[in-house]
Image 1: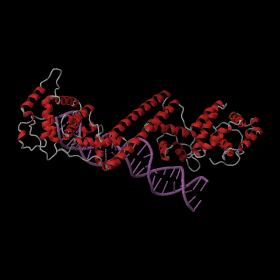
Image 2 (image 1 turned 120 degrees about the vertical axis):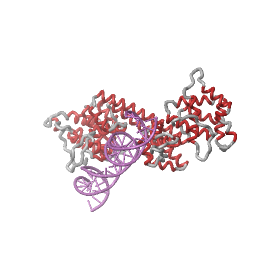
Image 3 (image 1 turned 30 degrees about the vertical axis):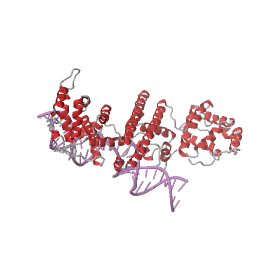
Image 4 (image 1 turned 60 degrees about the vertical axis):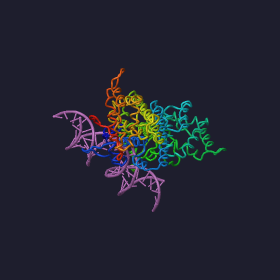
Length: 247
Length: 247
DNA sequence: TTGCTCCTCACGTCACGTGAGGTGGC
DNA sequence: TTGCTCCTCACGTCACGTGAGGTGGC
């Protein structure tokens, strides 16, 4: 009684969509009139609305066709699963929206929360913004390359800064960035300075309560990464990477 | 420093996705190492997360590339528009979920609310379920073919049932469905019965307060549609459609 | 050596959109 | 007659997925 265009407007789809549903066997081809036009009934409209409800729920067309043949209880449980999936998608959209707003505020969460907080604190601990940025890049790369052990490494590093001597050593690294490579102060530097060396050795010794197995390697890992991350044209402190670290 | 696979896992995409973003100019091609492998930095990871946040917000890739070049305020207002669009999509999903649950309960809303309520009331007014179904189909087709005037037609019809004589006439139509076409009671039927004829003429007379222009045609429209919707094999009451109605 | 990753085409997929070229209906 | 709708191919699009066939790294 109604044409494909009228049906399309009533349900809110394009005529092409209806023809595709015919071709895919979702909606049976209706009778044709004398001039070959498709003629639809109210029952077709009801069917099409059903199909559309499922399609808008994200159900693939092939699955919708299967659902037509499903029994009552199969159909009901399928609908329940689809319903739950929509809820998941709604939550995902809320999460996306949250991240979008972070993007707008310029404050993007790229790392786990504890790492993020640690990076915030670096400023209060006397480190330069450049050091903070380098730390952020370092941890992104560590979490990308070693997702399993990255958290342990991080916990260890965060703990090292609580050690006053190591804290001072890292601050020296930070400030040495702007020095000329020939600067005499760089001869007595980092772990080569006696007080820092002692602190490092103390740190490396397994302490009661469980020191982490990666702890000894960590300062070297940091140096090696830093040397790769260094902006070209800027000198880096002279520290010999003892041994090899595959990054 | 990291490979395409590591970057992909960190951000939660496939390597193919990253290569596509290179091909489309969304993410710059990084340096290659000696064996031709792409080598990514932390900055690339940050960029990719940004791209992904936008892509998951439904922004087309071509638009994302434009956004990279946008100024701060353009960028901010674009983000606000995207944010609003996500809210729209979330609402659409809630609406879809509502319709899905209606589908599960078997009680689908195919028509405007007032029509739906009217169909419900038909049962209480003494009409058969078959009549209700035919009325539903009729109104679906009317709303599909004449969306502009359908509401006016409907308001008129709903009012007609408040007229006791017309109410009785339609009930007769309902019951006549099962009668043999030769049944003698069909000679004094519908508008041909004197009391119904009077009621119809009264109804057709424009009343103070604005009778609807379609009112007179409506009973014929109904008959014509009913005759087309009639189940094959079932007889229809003998009523002459006076004049033509293009449906 | 083996399994894993990387490389580059090339083609496939999903759900339609968009003409092209033609006919029917008011 | 004109504009609108309908018809059937056929190709395009969007954002990737999926091999195919080959090489590099531990």
